[in-house]
Image 1: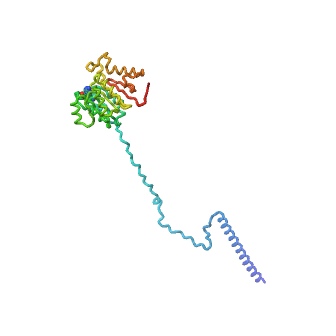
Image 2 (image 1 turned 135 degrees about the horizontal axis):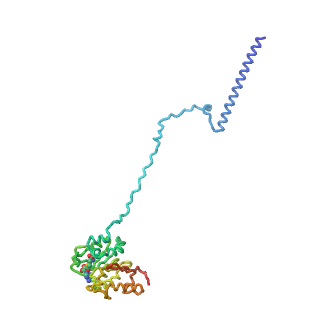
Image 3 (image 1 turned 135 degrees about the vertical axis):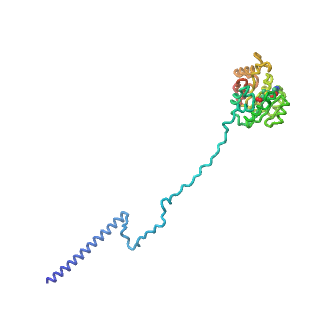
Length: 304
Ligand SMILES: C[S@@+](CC[C@H](N)C(=O)[O-])C[C@H]1O[C@@H](n2cnc3c(N)ncnc32)[C@H](O)[C@@H]1O
């Protein structure tokens, strides 16, 4: 009876043990699945619990993983833009005075006309210009051509004309040079001046009277030639000290000198009574020592 009871107890204990084991296993399983569910809801996967029938993860072999330095991409070379050369403007080119000195014209030695010419002609230097000078310099100690060379260098685009009285000198000069068109004649000869204008077509940007310097020559030339100055152009008369020299028809108190005429023309300008007639087309008379400049109005420019 005692043996039976003992064996029953053993069986009972075994049963209890099995039941306890099964209970433990079931609790463990539930908690295991519960964690899984929580992980899934949170979007996590449990690494240590592969899905059933999932083949084991095989890590791909790490072959030739590039080093960080190798992955650097070199920046593309950007070529600098090609240099565009600015047009060369010679800001250090010689002045009128320097050029005149180089060729020896008395415009910048015995006289100081550089002040007048640098004021009015420097701004025109690079323009194409039609220019007339009366007087080649045949009677000068330094000979003809000093101003010819000066103008050709000062105005690189000049169409240069000369009127010269000394025919032999003018022809010889013309035969040896190509920089100017030279007309032989007397600047006080009205028919000659008109013929000159006919042949050249007039239209001068600049006229310079550096001829014989007598009163008659200066007055006749400006009376006939001023019409051929382009609007905006300038007429210069040099060596006006001759208005005070009897040799040239001038002198103290002589009413018919060129300078007396200039003074009278200023009166006429102020009083709106232009005299002589060409003063109706002059907007400015600018006189410096021994030289005056008459600037021509532009078309339609009226002050009266
Ligand atoms: C002072 S020089 C000219 C100097 C020159 N322009 C220079 O700067 O070197 C005067 C020139 O005018 C000329 N001449 C004199 N009387 C003239 C006249 N009635 N008509 C034209 N030319 C004249 C002379 O022969 C001489 O060549």
